Image (tube, rainbow, N blue to C red; front, top):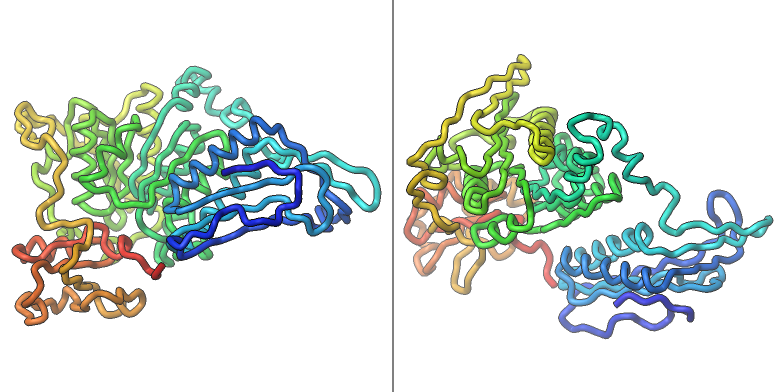
Length: 477
């Protein structure tokens, strides 16, 4: 519920809710100093009809972005004295972190989008009307002026970008630069899918995040940064892992999909989902100083034309194991954004070639990639007609499951899983009597890669938790 009120904001906005483990209230009060001038009072005016409509939109977006059990906001208008509450936001969620982040989101969006003006009464002299949304709003003509001068863009191309919808799966090393340049180009709607939270080891190659962001959800943070970068676009954040169960739903509203993931299982899931939904997919991967990029267009060829079955995760070293310089995913992610923008504008893109980029010697090699008529997804007689999770992968813990943390000791010590048995993969003993009574043993690592490899090899009762540690709660309600 969003309200415009003319009386003091004193009563709570939300009723008591026993289902909420965390209830956060934010109050913005009238202060006595602004830009070095002493303030004696504030006066607010609103265009009520538009303000209420836009305020309700913001609260609806908050409900979509955060796991809330309640959200409300009220903004006062009229003459306010020092110390009076001008805006109050209340958010209730199972966890305090989500409630806090929802409050922050609503306050920022109200300030940016709701048509409310304020008059500051200064002690030293005249009063001044200010747009509470800020004075740095820009027009589309100014924001996109330089790229609209290109013959390949112009007003018509900018209109195509404005209408376009692009989904980026993975807001990490590849996703951060891709998202930045998609937003800068004016892609009208950008979706972000990522279940991870920012870690200190991410910061050198994921420039959307700061040191103070460690522990916060990547998808929501990235969305906040993109909205601040370009207020003319819409950004949708999904703090979740892409799975066989949700992939079709997530891809459906979008025109182009970017793969910013770091494991084969999700890359091949995205390939299959994009082919089945006839979506353009821009996929990339990196290894040390090298990377590769491919654009999969409806009609093929696709990833499975090269590799009918997904390689096992772990057959190629990861950034965590082999290291990476930050500019490598930066370059490949920027190339992904370039291919996506070109596809939207109708310009030629990679489609029947795979580009290999070596940043050690600045070499680029293009390999012809023919469509395989026997491809199990895009071939003449496809065998993959629907998205199904591998039998050794699960997305939820069921009653009776034994959860086993297969991360190494230093990882588990730094971020323990209280409900899990600890048995690092380096010394995993599948015949341990600890497993004797369990009907199913669920293995969990940091991202789901090592547990996937282990479960695939062991089979039988052993399964891997998709997404790894990031899918498990870190605090009790």
